[in-house]
Image (cartoon, rainbow, N blue to C red; front, side):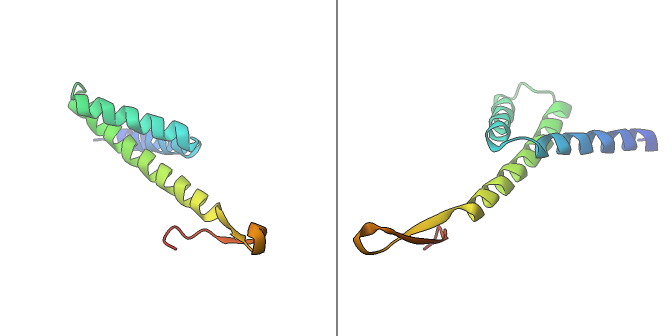
Length: 95
């Protein structure tokens, strides 16, 4: 592969990654589900399968990061006497 082709592929990969970074969770998840469906059907050429699989990996990482961000923002409301709100604390899914 020539240096020019490598540079073009790197530029395309950077553009794809920037595209993914701008996607909201719901759209990224929908695209990831579509990729899984296509790969499970097995009607995709090998080169295309590799390309969409790699995009799927990027989408999964993006969705994971968005979920972690959302989890960090969730607060648990603490109830006091008479079930009145008495403040909040960080959400702990294990606790």
